[in-house]
Image 1 (cartoon, one colour):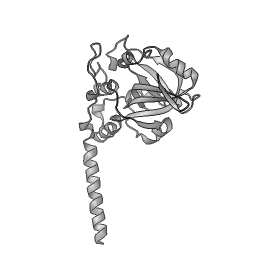
Image 2 (cartoon, helix red, strand yellow):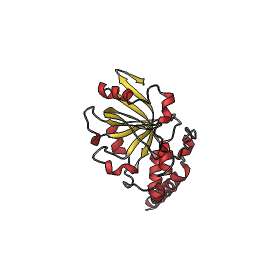
Image 3 (cartoon, helix red, strand yellow):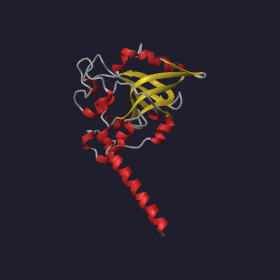
Image 4 (tube, helix red, strand yellow):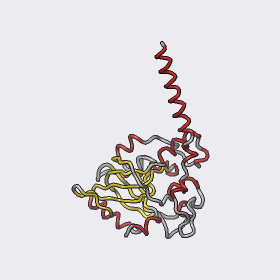
Length: 225
């Protein structure tokens, strides 16, 4: 009986510690710490829409470590967050904590780029610029998968200066045509603004956004592009 009470007490302490840690996730994680600041006059918070989401998309400081996943493994491990186009400030504290726990992570996701590379138009994260825009890519478990079975991974214009050709869609279209297995490295972001696209143009609202590195797997080598 005594051993059961001790075990219950230890379990209660562990649960309390876990809850206390989780409750602090949203308070200890600040996406702005991963930004170098303004980009051509556009602040890391962007202009309009959800400022917090914009700051996630504008994390232009590259990660120093990244956890390796396949596309399917990432689907299995990541949680589901609100699928509505509402500001993060209106999420519950538990939802904000859970988001912070995952969005503070950098990932390396293996798969195949499929469909096309789409140069986006004006977006709040880029302050409505028509020049400095994102490129949308789709990463899937097989080279023949549709967009509905793929996850969106995005190239930010803040990365153009560090990667030759990343300002051109053709750079990524070559990889799609080659059907080579790639590793996409960057920050995890849940983009609640695209809920209507689920099941049509994406499998999940989790994105690798922004991408900081793309590696092509050729034999036993991974070659950066």
